[in-house]
Image 1 (cartoon, rainbow, N blue to C red):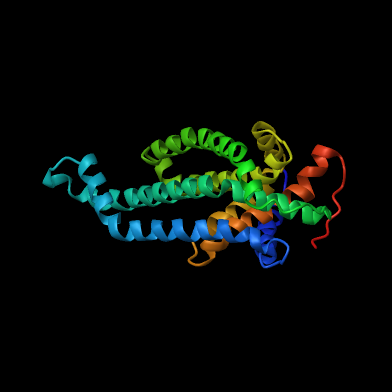
Image 2 (image 1 turned 60 degrees about the vertical axis):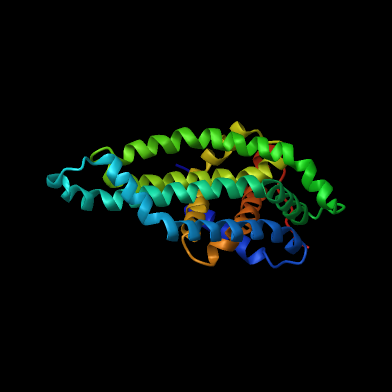
Length: 257
């Protein structure tokens, strides 16, 4: 596999560093607010309902036989992981659907600044113009994601494979995070969903390094609240520096103003 996971992770770190830049600061605020509200809701929901959901799954999977009670202790960690994964990915999907037009606008603004292109600020009209296209791409990502996440859920309960399911979930999540955020700058440049996947596969290790650090960052309190806009900025850097030259044949001229 081609690429460099450290280089991929570096794009996210650079994205974090660029968030306060005056030229993009206003475009960061709404994705940031969406992330804060939804992740706060996810944390509240887990704290209030987590034990009840795990116990419900245990009662559905195990007969009420006393001699099988020892299995509850074996299944509890696995089902707890399933609940965490389902809640995490569900809230992530909702957050991405709501923030998609704003993330597309942020990616466009970052790329224009990197290339030294000056454009008029269209405000809400620009956001509304992006809604149909960005929502269509989000639905394409969901259609790609759901069959694979369901397969992973099944594999989680398969003997032996279940033991490595945390690793499989992490790698899948890293790949999906890369797809999720690299799609914004690529969609702005009319790269189809299929072409985007091929471009990311060309340097799969770089893509997984980028998405993997996003995955890890999502697990850290406070940092996970600002990660969405940082990932959009990092993905735009990744696109401009590594993928755009393959598509348009020109080396990018980078200069953030």
